[in-house]
Image (cartoon, rainbow, N blue to C red; front, top):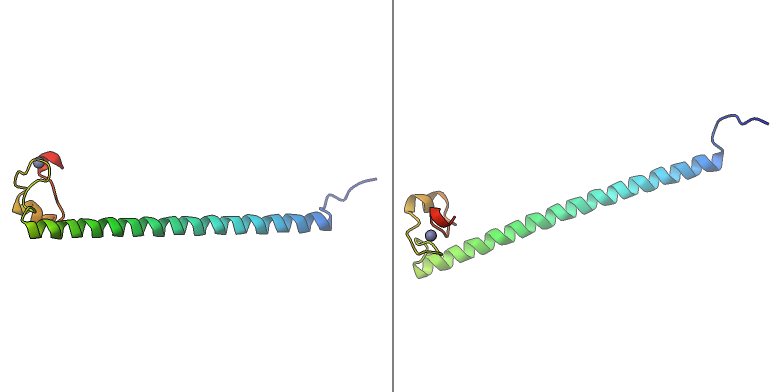
Length: 92
Ligand SMILES: [Zn+2]
């Protein structure tokens, strides 16, 4: 008795199901990656918002010009370039 070398129909069907499952898993992984990316973006936006709010507080109490570590002047030129700076060059 010899085999013709071809897959039996049920095996072909199983292979097709497995391919479909693999595709679904790839899609799920992609969705998860996308979700992780969205969460990272959200976290980054939240952190930036926190920094802006902190900068506004520092602006209100007049401490925005000084390093939060040593109180040395940060420098208006540096603040102009990066308004959210909270530290002098030495403590950045
Ligand atoms: Zn400093």
